[in-house]
Length: 260
Image (cartoon, rainbow, N blue to C red; front, side):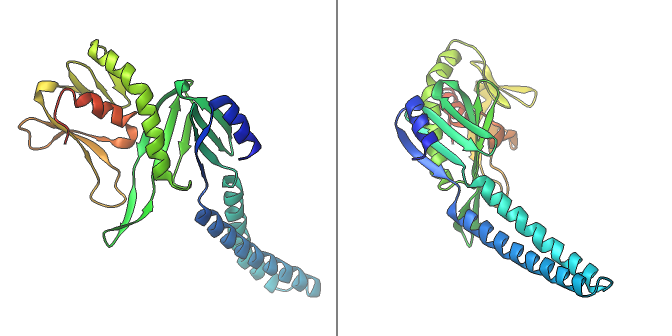
């Protein structure tokens, strides 16, 4: 553990999981960045040699035009890797520690307002080949911390993070719901009367089902499909990534309707 991780442990308690930037991403960008930078530097050196040899030569301009893209690409790749090298996302018993190029946060569970999740898996020949999940943690002060697929084992991190947040938020949401108060979940709100989304409302008696649906293409985002009883088309199709605390929403909705 690094020094800041020790400090986070003092604030948040014992470390449960630690996730860093994927080694494959770092290795790939360092390799490409180093190779292109060397090619660019070689071209620049050759240009300087040609200039010293013949300042009026046309090869100098041509060499510069050919060298610049290699050098620029190499620098961009190296900077990308260096900026992501120190990234950390750690789950502690008492909260979340997160560090990226913008700063670092030691966040107790009580400071977290909710989580947005974007689940995207890449398939080839019906086999999963890559995980492109993104989890955005919303804090009560308005800050948003995004942990994306550049982190190793992002799906395991997301599952553990969601579990902790659900366990904290479900009881108060249940109390508010049972008391008749509206409970917002980003782009959808529910109360004892029904579901409210896209500027319209549907009573629980008319709700046939709530269901997670994946897009037809691998790149399509998942959405929550709400069906009206007897309706042929969905009453609403809401992007999962815009629903705050999706699993808490589903837990409350299951008290009022059948979940498919």
